[in-house]
Structures are given as C-alpha cells and as structure tokens.
Length: 148
Ligand code: DQA
Image 1 (tube, rainbow, N blue to C red):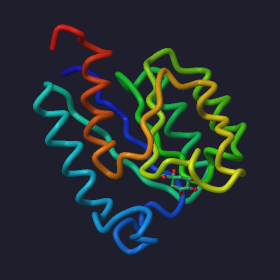
Image 2: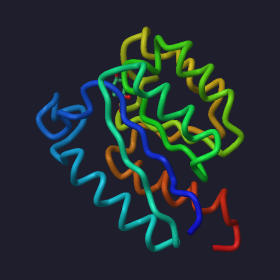
Image 3: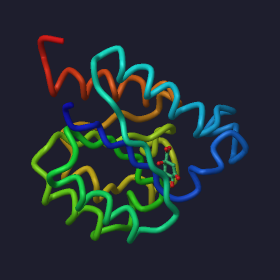
C-alpha cells in the first residue's frame, strides 16, 4: 500500500462549523475529513487526517511524515503566522507540501499576511472555503502522479 496523504489542521479548527461561521462556514471538521477521504480515494490515495491545538503535536506529526507520508496538506491556522518550529519541521520533509486556508488571510488583518509556512510550501490554496480541502487533495494527487 502506498503512503497516505497527511492532512494536518491547527488550533481552533476542531470547532469548525460553529467557529466564526461567517468566515469559516458551517461545515464541521468531521465533514471535511469525509470530503478529503472521498476525494483521495477517487485518486487512489488514503489519508491520515489530524487536528491539534498543540504546536508540539503538529511538529511531531510532520517529523513522522519524513518517511511516512506521500505528501502533506496543512492548514496551520494561527500557527501559520507565528511558528518557526512548524516551518523548520516542514523544511525536513522531501514530499510535496500544500498550505491551505479556508479564508483569504491576505484580505484580512495585517498580522495574517505573513506566513512562515509558505516558505516551505510547494503551493498554497486560500480563500475558497472548505472546498479548498478537496482542491488540495486533487492538487496533491496530481503532484504525486501527474498521469492520474
Ligand atoms: C485560517 C486562517 C488563519 O489566519 C486563522 O488563524 C485560522 C484559520 C484559515 O483556514 O482561513 O485559524 O488558517
């Protein structure tokens, strides 16, 4: 079996669906996971889907991905704008990395305009709502197997 696509979600995304729905929508993280699993399966991939409010836990999952994941899709949430530790962890992996945001951070407060994670990302999807997750899985499948 090929390695899974690792999908990581940062702080407060556990409350997706009820958290600031005018910005992030009404879909829950469990529903997002199901959308990702279905899309990945359509491309012949499995996913490993996680959320944590802890920077340390996210760094640990990225370290595990050095040998254990085909690619990483990450919505680092607020850690996008603060975490050199997540950036450094991502710099150690050789697989493709897609940075994902539900909202468009560039159209929001200035402190959201800087992303440490972008420095290690193959590409970024933002501002398209939770549909961005499905698009990210499609894009990852294409990066991993352009013929698919
Ligand atoms: C977010 C954008 C971040 O600025 C914010 O801190 C989040 C979610 C997004 O998905 O739009 O928690 O990553």
